[in-house]
Amino acid sequence: QAGDQLALVGRNGSKTLKKLFSESGLSQLERQTRLVAADAQSVFWAEGFGADRRTVITSGRTSRILLGWSVDPAEVQFEQKGGKQDDS
Image (cartoon, rainbow, N blue to C red; front, side, top):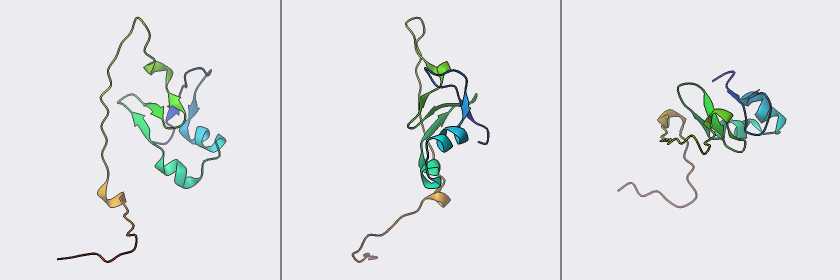
């Protein structure tokens, strides 16, 4: 979502995903294909960047996270590599 932010472990403040991606020099394709995990509150992890501070598990705090994902079939693209497709 526009404006999604991460307060990365070991860093002060927070940054939007857009700014993190831009500062890292990621191409538009890389930005679109990076995995990002979010819950009802906000983004809590981004591939290549790490976890948000609110998700850190300490000795006094334990947590379990169940991750799941869904794919919009309209956005899935398949590329056929050579050969002949058998339609029988």
